[in-house]
Length: 94
Image (cartoon, rainbow, N blue to C red; front, side, top):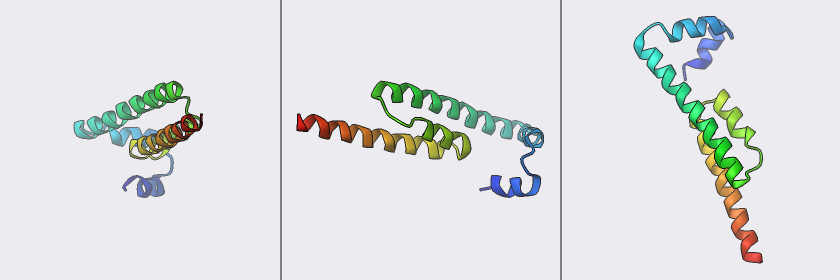
């Protein structure tokens, strides 16, 4: 994890972060990939969360924006599975 040491050295300097992120084509490509993945995941969380009536959709969104897609996606999928299990149990009781 390279981001935490970078923050330790430079602080939350957004201008420097953006400048270093676009220093060459491969780093620009990597950041664009991360950005697109995060935007698509947030859209998926909002859509699927509304469709399945999942509470606390904001948790995986905040997780995605702070820790990344690799945290937000598994968290949302776990929340969705727990929600679906609760619905199945409720339907069996009826």
